[in-house]
Amino acid sequence: MKILFATSELAPWVKTGGLGDVAAALPPALRALGLNVRVLVPRYPALAEAFPDAREIARPHWLGGLLPHAVLLEAHAPDGTPLWLLDYPPYYNRAGSPYLGPEGHDWLDNHLRFGLLSRVAAWLGSDDSSMTWRPDIVHCNDWQTGLAPVFMRYLPGARAKSVITVHNLAFQGLCTPAALPELGLPEHAWHIDGVEYYGRLSFLKGGLRHADWITTVSPTYAEEIQTDAEGMGLSGLLRTRADTLSGIINGIDLAAWNPASDPHLEADYDAAHLGRKAANKSALQCELGLEPRADLPLLGIVSRLTHQKGLDLLPPIVEALLALPAQFAVLGSGEKDLEKAFRRFGERHPGRFVATIGFNEPLAHRIEAGADLFLMPSRFEPCGLNQMYSLRYGTPPVVRATGGLADTVVDADAVKDGNGFVFAEATVAALHAAIARGIAAWRQPARWVRIQKNGMARDFGWEGPARQYAELYRHVAAS
Image 1 (cartoon, rainbow, N blue to C red):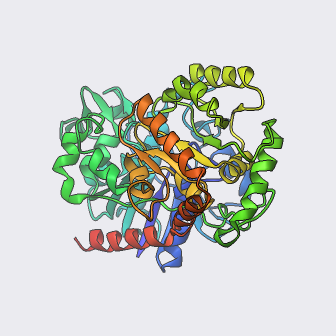
Image 2: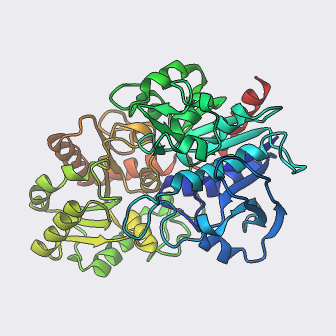
């Protein structure tokens, strides 16, 4: 089968969240199963620098509306995956985030930038394409490629089947009705059963309406987004498409996240040598200026510091947790009030609380390995990756029962083979109680080792999810 994987991010070159990681890992895993995969992604500066010798393979003809002529270049990732780089410098040759300008606001032409990406994906999946390689499935991801199924539905002639994966329903690609002709969409697309969404044009709504199949990044999230509470205004549409909606949990990169061979750690370890993990805690404490004490539980956080991540629930209980006593190592950035709150705790409690504002990949690995407990109290979490990193590193996570967290973390106080600590309500009291349960278990060495090993025994690699996607592609192609 031939699969076109259309994405606006591709790690390690362009990444703002989990989409970049999925785009880097799933296509190679599919290729390992024998599928013929191409990854379509804009040629951002980092990709232009990484692949200066990419060769031209196509020039899509006029695509309608204000969409410009562009060039399609081909390169190959280090693992051999073919990359099709969409080159139009006025749209994609911009520094920083792929979505935001220097002032932190969306680029005003995002509808054209990602409308072009969607339109080229649709062109490649249609009879209009000049390419000899023609996909059986166009796999779109989030709003940035959400219009591809819409364009394919309105194109004449044969077309590929389409799948759209929702990595985060909160981002919907909204723009004004004036975008409809600018994107080259017909007037009859402006309809409740088309791209119209409460008086605005929504890339994601259009994709959810017109794709042949919808997936999300965890089974629980697939159920949650069909509820009014979690559906972000799209629950009704998703309920009508329930028979073509499924959840497939993401995998993680087992090579990059492997405590037995992680180059960022002080000491390598595995489930058979958990005693070596203590050296990483000691090294992390030294690196961050925390008191070098093995007798204190070290609570780790690597996250965006936002309301969605539930981290506003933590400041009211930090003082009580420090008094247990305990230590904190926080890494992340986000909402300014939370950044300030965590910085203040570090100033008040040197040696016991440290907040590193920003992103630091090596430090993220060291926190995963050096912490005793990992905190992830998200209000909603489509999949989540850090809880899987934590389980693999023998650092039991404390999570709220939502999305992919509910699908991967099993409460150790509920079942014998539990691997973490789970709470239901997004409240300060519930988070406090779950952390307290985790610390109580940490103080029981034999039980703690059993919880660690339960987490480390689970396979979070991409082979299983890739097989589920391959089976889904075959089903969609045959339907």
